[in-house]
Amino acid sequence: MSIEKWINTRSRYLNNIPVKPGPVLYWMSRDQRVQHNWALLTAQNIALELQSPLIVAFNLTPSFPLANLRHYDFMLTGLKEVEQDLLSLNIPFIMLYGDPQQTLPAYIHQNRISTVVMDFSPLKIAKQWKETLVTQTQAALIETDAHNIVPIWQASDKQEYAARTIRPKIHKQLPQYLTPIPAIQPMPPHNLPQSHQPTDWNITYAQLKSNTEIKPITWLTPGPQAAQQTLDHFLTHKAPTYATDRNEPSKDALSNLSPYLHFGHISAQHIAHQTTHLESFFEELVVRRELADNFCHHNPHYDSLASAPNWAQQTLADHQQDPREYLYTQQELEQALTHDPAWNAAQTQMLTTGKMHGYMRMYWAKKILEWTPSPAEAYQIAIYLNDTYSIDGRDPNGFTGIAWAIAGVHDRPWKERPIFGKIRYMNYNGLKRKFDIQSYIEKHLPSQKSLFN
Ligand code: FAD
Ligand code: FO1
Image (cartoon, rainbow, N blue to C red):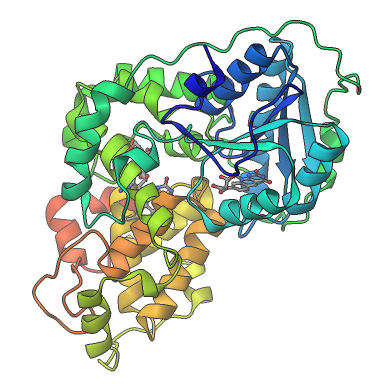
């Protein structure tokens, strides 16, 4: 296959330096896996075509925003498995440390890398890293969307209004993009200058500067193998009842795949292949998740209230001065000290397990809007709590979920009311009416009884 064939619609050039013979580097970041990884596949095919060595590098930024030991432990455990998977395919894995805006240009220069392939992320931090690289290197730079089934640039060229507007654009292209993903092949022996030294994981852990009081989670095993096992378990035991049970917070009905999708330990395309028959799951995994990337990619204000559509900005401003019956500080919310046991149960579930039930996340964020002095502050508190404690946090899905709950993004105006204005409202009685919320409360707050029973 010619090089151009591999720089297909899943990839794009970030500079106009042509690919030429010389070592090919896959700078792994969002998609931390070997198999079902279009970015690694693109890099491998270019290296084979050029008869050049292939190297994979991961740059550890010890102070990733709002990340702590809970997240680094999950991620680094997964990367240890990725290193072994790569070595078994004769592909060297290099761990870099520090600010990628310095470490990558230096690595590329020192090792005379001729082509760099990167995976895609819509987040500003990743875009900043790449913008710097474009100005600092003479290597060909290629970005491959290894996260979305329909590449972000093919799905839409603008911020989509709602799931209903992006859904047809995604479904129309699934026949072209929801295809089997070729396996990564073993590479021929390489004569790279630095004989590959396996990563010293003690040095890696020693680089971390984040706080350590938020403990790693133990109920979920990190890494690509465990991700596959979690998928198998979901398909066998949960898929049949997912459509009916997925919103019931007291049931363990969700797939638990979000931490693996966030760290790229598993490919959404690989999951989608096996879940086309699960309509409600497929809608979340494909349409909702790819809508989140679309929102973060096209709206630079995804991490603030400025992301809200005009109707929402207006309505929240109209009600900014409404009296708040309850007001809590970030710390009181963080410690689950509100009057509402359902909210406290959701916050406690996130604190202790790192993963709040999806339905409760909607209720949780909307109550932060109701119980804080301003929508702008509510937005920041929701991001801070979600990204500090959720194992799947710091993700486009999180920014988009908070934008939906507090700022009406991807939603429509509802009946006007105090504080919320026309932002969709949720309340405790709704939970009580629809779910066994008492069991959820007792499961996560054994001591507290329901306030309203
Ligand atoms: P399942 O129901 O099994 O879903 C399977 C996959 O579908 C998920 O892993 C996810 O990739 C996708 N998906 C499901 N629901 C959504 C959704 N509403 N939006 C986008 N994709 C979805 N998701 C995160 O990954 N990280 C977050 O930090 C996060 N924060 C959220 C905050 C708020 C306020 C809200 C309302 C939602 C948030 N979500 C977040 C979206 C959703 O709640 C989670 O993706 C889901 O609960 C993850 O659990 P699961 O994989 O077991 O879910
Ligand atoms: N990606 C990296 O390339 N280097 C890191 O050190 C890194 C740390 C990290 C910590 C928590 C977390 O949730 C994600 C982290 N990521 C890191 C991966 C991250 O998902 C993406 O690379 C960026 O978010 C861009 O999408």
